Image (tube, rainbow, N blue to C red):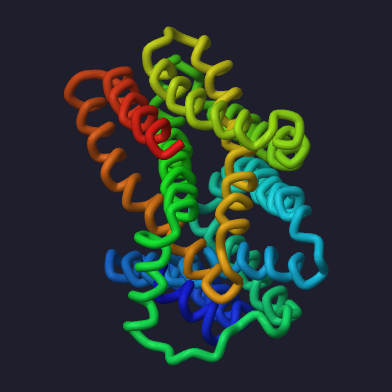
Length: 326
């Protein structure tokens, strides 16, 4: 994540996005034609590298494009539209992917390879804003200086980054726990795709409205709701019985749609253009670090005690961390 974000800041976001799009398409092509564990590993490495090149660079390029047009105040709206398109696409793909998988388990991979390939010409058509890069001596020392600035010197940026990463890890964890929650409420298997589609539509809808909701609640109010309600919903989702879980999931996914564009905007406001992609990539990396801590813990507690225990403990930790960083 960090080297790829740094490349975007030094050599340009467009070049990095083109590389990421190519690696992403390549990963699904490898998946489509491999049948071994080695093929699976190579495909995942290609997809992981491709995603790392894209993450950070995409948000940075969007924000700096708006800065060049003096429209940076509209970032939350555009990031919300971007997120909503992703969620709506995921909702649609959940239905179509499941349907074509009944014909052949290979077909979803073929389809995904074709769709992922369209990102390459899309990336090639991007127009990068000019005069945002500083001429500087690049290398490991420069990366360490940037990290020192982010982590040690810039207090506001540091805590915005931490807060966003903690909430990002929480929403990622709940996405992975959706299926165990469906099992807990004894949801018929045939409805899994329908409910999953509905939750993604909720997230997509709230992402579009995120800038309006944040404007109505204010920065402080929005942050407090995100910091408190998201971990509290996680805490109770594994404890309530039956279909009472669904309303909690709906509210959680609604807040997930609001949190992503709003928290990215707060980070961008505290970040210089010359290091923006590195900072956004660092956010994505820290999300994965937190997730790698919480997910095995929650999984172990769920396996050895109960799903409620796993989510209650995770929710408690996340509530504590989010309040401290808030």
